[in-house]
Image 1 (cartoon, rainbow, N blue to C red):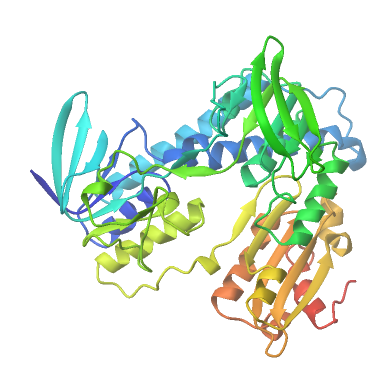
Image 2 (image 1 turned 30 degrees about the vertical axis):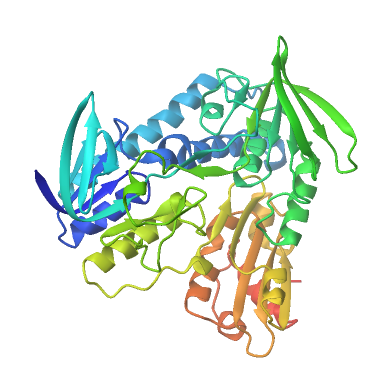
Length: 465
């Protein structure tokens, strides 16, 4: 029986990052992966391929508007098979990169279905054969999969999840997106750029409901300007295939029955944890609606068993959160001085057009927490680099505590929002104040310098607006 310091089930951005860090810290580590490739959902059918298509969509829009920049382009078209080939090429490149990093850090990998087989033991089944691994510590990093609506089944062609929509044989002329969270609005943005007629149906009162209310309102305005149809407080009743495509029956916000026909329907109503058939019921780990309870260092109630990523109760289902959870858990195992995981310091990034980046509390959350709140806003229309780029919609909103100026949250919608949110992530992590950030020098001309004006705006001292 093989013996390890750490056995990880799952090789997504939580599992593979944890494995590499474990290798760096001298832990003998093995990763069990059910698929014949490493990288999990994020790399193969999630974050990376989606962002490839988002970048292609942005480039296509730039070419369509080339005359504004003095560039004459006679004919602009989409070669969909080539786009898909490039997407796959990038995915495969990075999957190979993980294999290399495993070799470099002496991390072993075994393909097969991993299950917990008692304290410190993992069974790996493949092709009817089972081998047992023994490890001092075991980490569950099995990820999540797309949820669907009651009575609605994915067929991979007309009714699709985030997986199948990445490989449609052609761009649909019409697309209905059910759900206006990050996944829904990103694919709505992609296919609208490529010419699809897009309708988004959201059950809640606003799009991207986890974001600040002003961000939601700005995204809705931008989407409608782009010709994306939005219906909030829309309750989907049924999704049915027919000879011509798919019919979606729903009730609008007034309760009136509505019907819409489309070539394709994307169901983007959230994700459910993959914790079935991995042996958790044989342990003392607690489950809640399929999610695993874990402590501040990602430890479960079963000694030596850790859980990270999308399967953990109450944690954000984000790749970068899973990665840090894995790093912290491994640090605990290795006896390193690592901080407890703090979900309040996890940034949210949504890569639609316009982009959204946020960290910390929304204005309403800060008020609900009892803070005396002071906010500031700065529009990208007043930022010179945004004007140069031709993307000057949106704004940055700073939420702070009034008396001492503690930065509680920062919310951006507009050009490069997913990049420039890095500064307030660091600011909140270091418990910076508005005054600290007001006197941080921002390079000019950059989109990033709008952050400086946004922090100054809390004091009513924005320079460029």
